[in-house]
Length: 105
Image 1 (tube, rainbow, N blue to C red):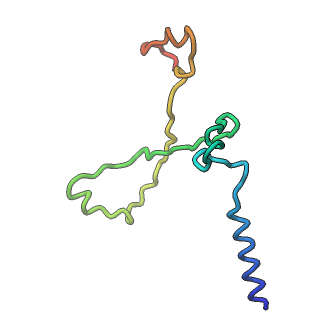
Image 2: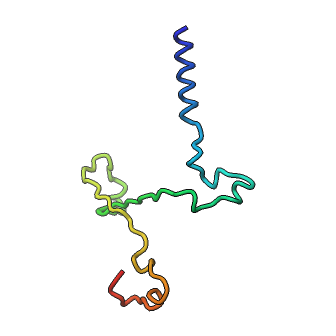
Image 3: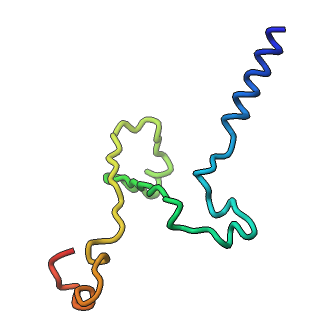
């Protein structure tokens, strides 16, 4: 009897964990009129940070073939990838007059 109650309790908790969250709606999950009337500005997207290795060594030839990554002890130095610049935020005459020789941005 305890085993049945335990199994039912685990099932109940697992179904609750996979329930859909109404606030976290993706456009790809919608169909029909809900997809057509989706408002992007009402659903805030969380920006994703992208990292890249700074000191990655590139091997070629026999050195690459004989490399043993599990014996590598160097620490990875991750650097956040930045996309865009301050010059992309300019509008109007400031954007029109911004050139590659400009020091700012």
